[in-house]
Length: 131
Image 1 (cartoon, helix red, strand yellow):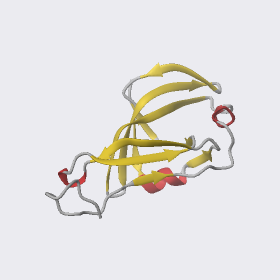
Image 2 (tube, one colour):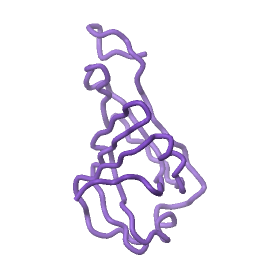
Image 3 (cartoon, rainbow, N blue to C red):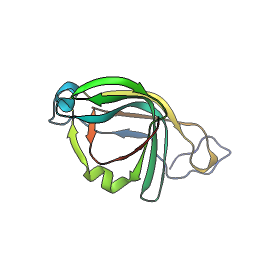
């Protein structure tokens, strides 16, 4: 359990969220067969509610015929956490840590520092909204 400071009770919450390297090579290797997709980069925010989640990308681009194309705005991914984890089809070998990149606001205790890291992740059939 963690608390923002002495004024708050400790509650269960995240600290570091990481996914290790996988067998699917570079980002370019992972997208070469993608006809149409979205490349979501960085985290602008996210939350969970039971089994459901939303995640807003800091930046996003279209992927067309295996290449990164034009920038798109306001991209949000959402869905069932467990279904989305089952729909991971690729885990790259380019692990990167985004240290101190965000804050956990659970229970009104904002912003308790958190960090995260992962290689590129490829997911099929995730709900995406944006412009």
